[in-house]
Length: 390
Ligand SMILES: Cc1cc2nc3c(=O)[nH]c(=O)nc-3n(C[C@H](O)[C@H](O)[C@H](O)COP(=O)(O)OP(=O)(O)OC[C@H]3O[C@@H](n4cnc5c(N)ncnc54)[C@H](O)[C@@H]3O)c2cc1C
Image (cartoon, rainbow, N blue to C red; front, side, top):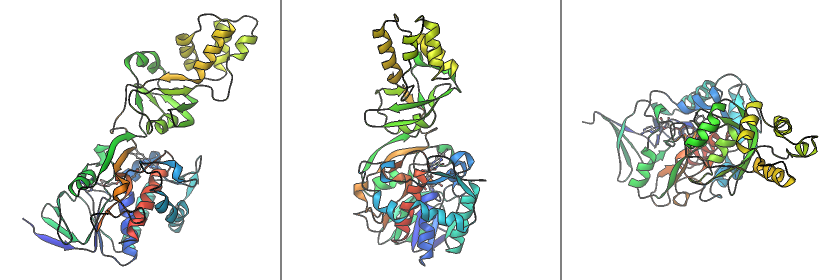
């Protein structure tokens, strides 16, 4: 039984990065906005992001830092709400931050400062936030009606900002995709991205004893390459280079790992007085951590020490082919790739082309950033694009 009916100009589903920024922009323009959040807290992903310090943007943000079936879609929103716009907000709230590496901006103290800032901005813009809202049904007649247990929320505009499927234990649900289906919008197949790999049993036996060891590598698929750190885990591979390439990986395909980017490893073996395992070990210790060097060499020792076999070894060092068994899935994925097909949305406002008043923003849309603050920048930018159009 409905015991209360709330009327607003706009309803935003999800109090994450995109939903909150959208609500703030719309509220500042005088719209009466309600944000409905399933959990008991706003911005839970912001709080756990960047190891608790939130890598809130990247000053080198470019459209090339995003994956989407339509690589042009994100350009307009990203151009109209830039990293400097978000930095201006952070500075207005006197939040101390620093550039860690490669343009990645982090809070000096805590991610909580970002959620506090968003909460304060919501308060100033008279945005009403409803926590623990258990949404059961969304109806569309002349406007939208959202039923949440005994409450009914009504508005002519509905913004879906419920995020992706990653980390279900802190509140991720499929509501955004379910609503897209309900309203007849196409969805690009979703998959875990920025996610560690699980190695096949044989490779696990060979390499997972190295858990905790990391190396500077270049990892490639057919069309992409990332040079950063790779880390062995108890089940497979992780670290920034691996998380980045995971967004491009297709099941069954190999990763090509260059263990010594821009270096020649075997020249010192060739020049050694005696070519043997000892001179090879010395050469590999120059480029890889000791345990990894020894383990890899043991498994890839050449049949002989001829120039031909050393050339083969050199090629293998730069193109070590590994076929992961799987990824660690949504439980460990930082984001969800795929999502609402961008062909369904206006790139300027994020409004559905066919259902007037229905908007999709943030991670639920088929726009996925690289590691390094790009996913938040997309959340802020797409949130601002919609918020300014309400
Ligand atoms: C561990 C981790 C670390 C990360 N670190 C970074 C980082 O440092 N930098 C970076 O750029 N990106 C980072 N990301 C990615 C980033 O957090 C997301 O891309 C971003 O939060 C997406 O914003 P969003 O608003 O679209 O979705 P979310 O922030 O996920 O917000 C969605 C909101 O909707 C709510 N919701 C879901 N279902 C319902 C429902 N049925 N009813 C009502 N509400 C619902 C959720 O509870 C949530 O509050 C990280 C992700 C993870 C998992």
